[in-house]
Amino acid sequence: MPISAEDRTYLDLAIEQARLGWEEGGVPIGAALVRHGANGPEVLAVGRNRRVQMGSVIRHGETDCLENAGRLPASVYRECTLYTTLSPCTMCAGTAILYEIPRIVIGEHRSFEASESWLASNGAELVIADDETCIGLMDRMMRERPEIWAEDIGIETDELSGGVRAGA
Image (cartoon, rainbow, N blue to C red; front, side, top):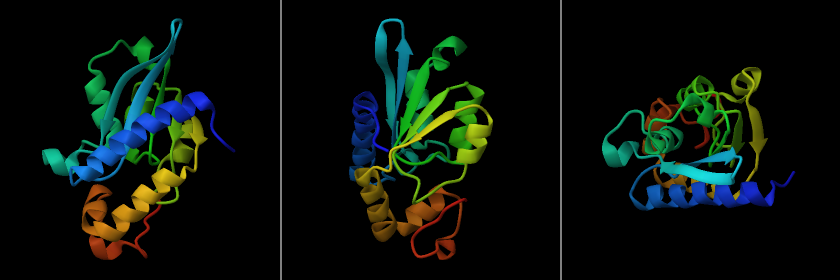
């Protein structure tokens, strides 16, 4: 099912961040946090996976985006959609649930899926875009930088199954 034009706009922001991350030598995962308040949609922050660039263990696309948003009142998060190019890992899903972000638009979940049923069971609305650009970015990642991908999802390179890892 195609996503709305509005969702397409904000997923494209996340894709732009993913491409920047790739060009910087990192993992091509991006995110955008958009508030849907009384004055219409407002982009609060964007981010990208910067684990490699920053030497960080926690700077995934979603956590980088939320860090870039800065400290916000809890009520703001409850009016947001988190756009991400890849299905969130358990760390990023936990952060979304902690801050009660009600809606997550996911670019793709073929390459990795670890938390969607848990997110849904905790009340998050999930929209799966099944976006060809997001799929292509991850396919390239697994072909060209499998060791960085394995590290990103907390496994050894030899545990990758045909370059694809789901349910880590």
